[in-house]
Each structure stands twice: as structure tokens, then as C-alpha cells.
Length: 239
Image 1 (cartoon, rainbow, N blue to C red):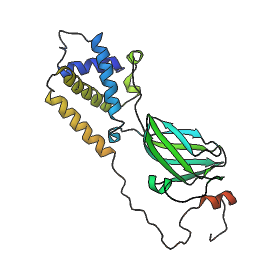
Image 2 (image 1 turned 90 degrees about the horizontal axis):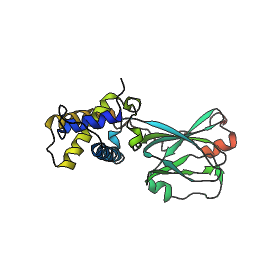
Image 3 (image 1 turned 30 degrees about the vertical axis):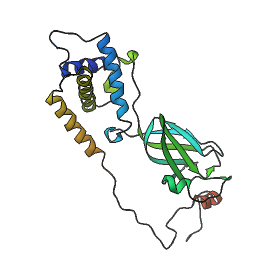
Image 4 (image 1 turned 180 degrees about the vertical axis):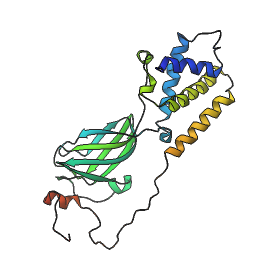
């Protein structure tokens, strides 16, 4: 059975106790206010990305000699890779200071091996170094913000967009926002639902603290893509 956006907004009004399920219907101005507040609920997740439980990828084509790319809707970048023929290469994600304030040769194209992401309006700016020598497909994994909704989305089945537990969470958040909007006290059961699901989502989005060993004395432990650019991915034994 479909769980439409219209149903989510209607249920949020009933959960908030602003409208009575037995005696009042939700529509007209209520729906318009519900849509506006629901978009604000979704927008807040762009700031608190731990509450976004879904990771996804986007692929764009590199432009020869271009360093900067805008990745729309990206709010938490995780990794960048690119393909050269049938080989996938990782690009190391480094800090703003290391990328923008360290030395490097400008004006040559090669296989990118370093990148930096910067949050900007409606997405992220991606910087890659060295600039691409070909139109490699760039694969960006991370968290992307939720699309805003409008009147035309009211019949949309939300189960095609979110899991049921997350619909319950968003519905409860909207009920809380409606209470704030109308100056109505929040039902403790609604807050309990929000707290419980928030805790579960936080548990799902654990921080990876796996230690990574760095060899300070060489020994071929690091990858130099500029060398790979000359060898096309192959190097002599013992390199």
C-alpha cells in the first residue's frame, strides 16, 4: 500500500494534535503549511548529515585541464575514484590546507591523485590535482541532500524514496515543527519517537576509526599516479 506525501503531512497534523483525526480533515492551507515546513525539515539534514542514513554515488566526466567541479546536492563527500580503461584508481581526499596551501606544479595534465571537497551553496566544489589528461569518469560517493517537494509531489509514494522507519521519523519531526508553528505543546510520545529513531540512525552512521599505517621510510608503500601515467598502470618488479 502506498504511503503518499499527502498522507505523511496529514498524519503529522494528527500526531501534533493540531487537527483532530475524528472530526477534522487536512487540506488547503494546512497542506501548504505542511509542505513548507516539511521542506525545512529536509533542509536541516544538510547541516546535520549524520541524520541522513543513505549513501549514494554520482558520476561525472572529467574535463581535460579542469581543476574545479561543482557537485550538486553533495553534502558529505566520502570518496572519489576514476576509471582508466578497465582499471579503477582511488583519489586521496586531503585537507583544505594541504591541498590549497602546499606547493605543486601547475599547468600540466595527468592522472589525478589528490582531491579536496568544499561545501558551497547547494552542493560541494570538488578540486582535483593534477588536472585530468583525459575525460575520465569521476565517481563521487557520499551523502546527498534531499530534494525539496511541492504540490505535484503530494501523490508520490514515499516508500519509493525512504524506508518506513525514516518516514516515521520525518513524520514525527514535521509534527514537532507544526507544534512550534502553531504554538502547541509537543506530545511526549512524538518526542520519544524522534529520540529513538535519531539514536538508531546515529548508531548506523558510525565513525570509521580504523588505524592506517604510514611507512615513513619508503619501501614502495605509496602510490604515485604520475609514475603510473608514464607506465599506463604497470611498473617494473620491485618499484
